[in-house]
Length: 176
Image (cartoon, rainbow, N blue to C red; front, side, top):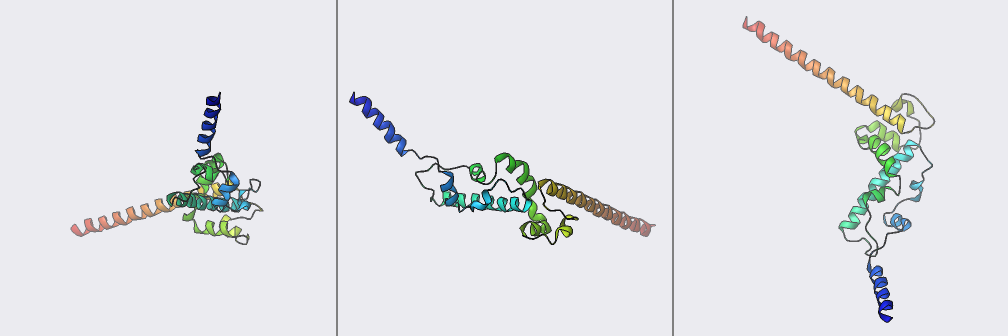
């Protein structure tokens, strides 16, 4: 009978040595996450961008903690996805945040607008003024910028071709 009780004690002792999942509250504290950025009710684009930047910072801090060996040994390590989920769901991260924000630094005027707490320059950036901007607005804006860039590239290419053709025509005329 004591062997059964002894086995149970060994199982409990083994379980105690195994790292356990880190509570969300402790993970947020370890990664220095501002609780104000974990709200899921605020849907504004500026708030979402703040969450995006905080997510990137938290992932970088997590990677630093792991590389420096400062992760609390009594807790299981988490995945990058779990760090992101402090702020936003996996589907929203991949469906909204990545398409809208991953290349946003290429658009300085939009980054300025996203980081601004006021809305004085809405019309300069967006071309119109709204009370609240959402991901759909930014997706449309980015698509418009992409179309404009394609037109500029096409125009530059046509100008180069035209200059090359003119230069070739001059060479042909000189030979005659």
